[in-house]
Length: 241
Image (cartoon, rainbow, N blue to C red; front, side, top):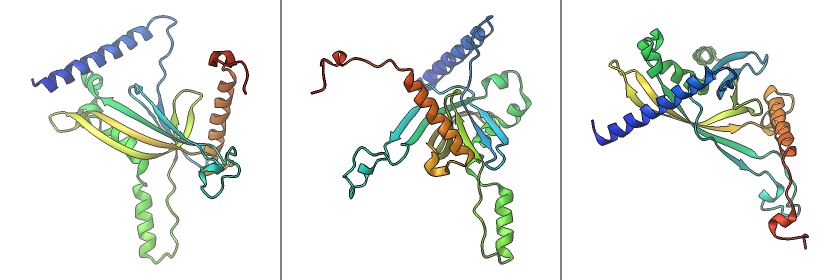
């Protein structure tokens, strides 16, 4: 085994040990339920849930970036620099790990046949239009239709506990397949996701996603209200000059 392969084996063994520890702890009476982050696809018209994709392992990090939307962003209008024009543009980045080790140990038939391709496909097809829609549009075009409506995808929600239910659009998607079975089915992979939170500026107040965004912002305001404000003396001053 090469030095790199040895290090990967050590990391994988440590990861499995950590997961087994979580499983053992979760069997103790009174232990908290370990919730998972995940992605939910819902019908934007009916709000019916179409697919739920729990993350196999919660990512170690979640990077959030907020870009302020204010009048001062417009170089031609600096007369009211404190006025906000809307919610900030929030983007998310995270790495998702998918591993077939546990499923292969119990000889799960789907995993034995296809590896982790079903999990990868469930994530990938979020950013694909449905093949039935493509075929229908092609048929309409061949019959001379002058206007063909753009294909609307399900509303994608990124859920990271009950206070963070976010309507999002996936903006970046990359997959690194790291191990394969004898049939070259991937059995371990890392998926890097970039997402942009869709706010009322994108969806409007009447859209299901818009109401979810407003709930997200109101939860944020409620949590901010729980913060215990400091004192000026903490900052080394007694008054604002």
